[in-house]
Amino acid sequence: MWSNLVLRFALFLTEPRDALLRAAAEITAALREDALTPLPVHSFNLDDVATAHEAVENGIIGKAVLDLR
Image 1 (cartoon, rainbow, N blue to C red):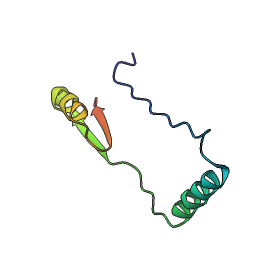
Image 2: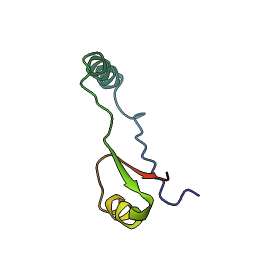
Image 3: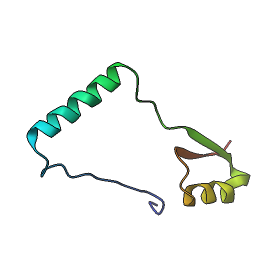
């Protein structure tokens, strides 16, 4: 059910508190300025499932979605 699921974690417990606060402030500012954008969506027809799989294997930037309609 989860064979192509990728979870990435970052552990920040060892970072100094001032660095974490600075990062939070910079992320908040970027969100307010709409500088962060969603990842692009790459839609594939069901007939192109092999192409979609190859795109994921090759590390496309964004989300690969199968259109089942």
